[in-house]
Length: 157
Image (tube, rainbow, N blue to C red):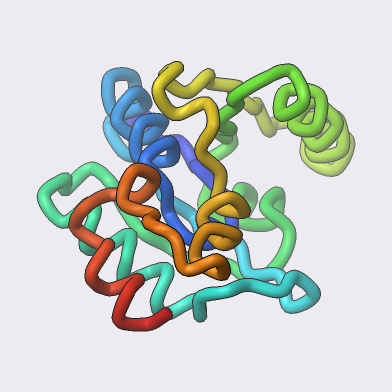
C-alpha cells in the first residue's frame, strides 16, 4: 500500500489543504493528514477542534487518515515506516521555505522524500494565517474554508 504524510498545523484547514489531499489521492492509497503539535507555536484553534474539522471534511473518504503527533516529523516517519511527505506550495516563497525543511529533514532521516505539490490557482491567495486575520477582523471566511466546517468555526470563534 502506497502511503504519504501531509503534515501541518492546519490552523484551520483551508480549501487549499483539501485540494492537495484530493490530488494526492490520485497517486497514493492512503494520505495521512498529520497534525504536528508544537507547544511553542501559538494557534487560534485547539488541536481537538482542528482534528474535528479534518474528520468532518474527510468523513466520506476512507483513504484519508487523521493523526496527531508531538515531535519531529522525521520521528513520525520512522515510527510509522512512511517516508513520503507532501508539502503544498502556492508560490516561490513557499517553495524556498519548504526546500530548507526538506534539506533539514533529509539530514536527520535520509529516507525522507518530500514532494512539493502546487495548489490550484484558485487557492493561491488562501492561507491559514489569512483566515485567522479575517476572523479577527470579523470578516467572512466562507471563500477560504470548506463549507462543512464553517458553522463549527463560527461557533468556536
